[in-house]
Image (cartoon, rainbow, N blue to C red):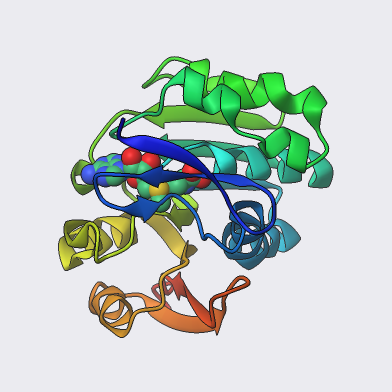
Length: 226
Ligand SMILES: C[S@@+](CC[C@H](N)C(=O)[O-])C[C@H]1O[C@@H](n2cnc3c(N)ncnc32)[C@H](O)[C@@H]1O
């Protein structure tokens, strides 16, 4: 078996990818990591100034980032267009075993969580009136959009596991995919990654990381007048 469900330190599950020997989330806490890196450091900031927010997620995986964004959009009553890229989907058997709704005390949303995974690929669907959702079964390297997204959740496996996903060509595609003043967030704070993002045109911010990690990276696409 290539995947194993593991328990992280905040009590939420993650997945160990046995081939790459890498986990889908921080072992210090999967829910905590998503809350800090993606929701607090990007989504909530955009939600202060925008009613409609478009998001591209690189590496859909368990769907935890999408689920927590859906819940936050509901709480804040914001409209979200969410597009998730995933080349190697997990099985429904694995998805049903994950304890995210239980840990977030929202078992009534388990159906929505499973729905994110059941929905057909390559078509836009409404999960509810606030949340429009599309999954693309594609390789990250081939993704290219044009000035389309307010936020990118860059959640690929770490550079030591999949260095090809952290190359300049990928970040150039990410840069082009964002609207001006769009924000890319990642848990990764490696110097070489920040320098590569800078070379792609981003303004880089090193900000405090989630529990167990000193720093993470927020990268901004400057608006043309800057
Ligand atoms: C760190 S995990 C993502 C965790 C995910 N955001 C979550 O909340 O569970 C990285 C994801 O990228 C996917 N992936 C790996 N290589 C890829 C590629 N070349 N193109 C697209 N997705 C890829 C993996 O299958 C995995 O789901």
